Image (spheres, rainbow, N blue to C red):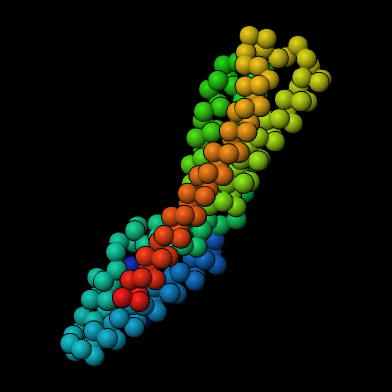
Length: 198
């Protein structure tokens, strides 16, 4: 079936829409879709004797973009993408330390937004890495800076309580976003199971 030009083009588009997934998960998802198309085409051909059974089978599926989004939800992102995002958040967190007031004021909401959005998309495991990584990075960097160069702290900037509160909020918000993702996945699985049983 994979030699069929239409199917090959469709599967290629689906695979392209699975950005962020690992190669192994992409291959597994593509294989599942290919099996579905083969089975559905055989059923169409048996019932209708249509010459375009494969085309009809493809038409039963949503667009490649929708499939790609669903597969990312189901299989998750690849480890390299997760680790890359955690590294970015940890790096950006260094600039949220109130050494340079303007940089910390601008970077904190951006870093917070990236961490929460990524946690919402990737689940509780990545959420823990994002939240804890960001909080620990800024805390360790702050300790190093204020120990080695105490004059670098901006006396007019936010105090220690604010710094600690934002670090805790970093972790809590990321974990909540990750839990929301897990709940969405649980509901999606229950919905799919109910539909199959019905």
